[in-house]
Length: 61
Image 1 (cartoon, rainbow, N blue to C red):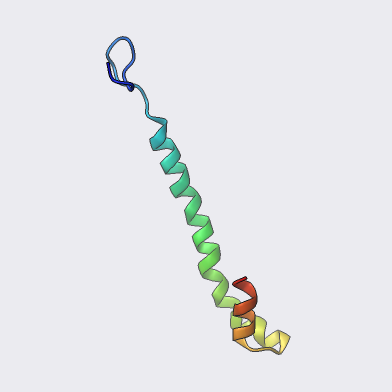
Image 2: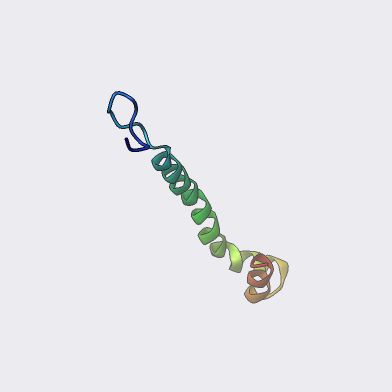
């Protein structure tokens, strides 16, 4: 008998699919926050009186 089958022959639920779905759902907010921070570089650099490269370097560490 295969590991994913119960005693009555029906296949059980694979929790691996749930884990993969949760990981994919967790990537979406992180990717938005990482990709949207670059939109504010020019305004932050202007208000602080430094170059955009310095702000970019600071946030990449």
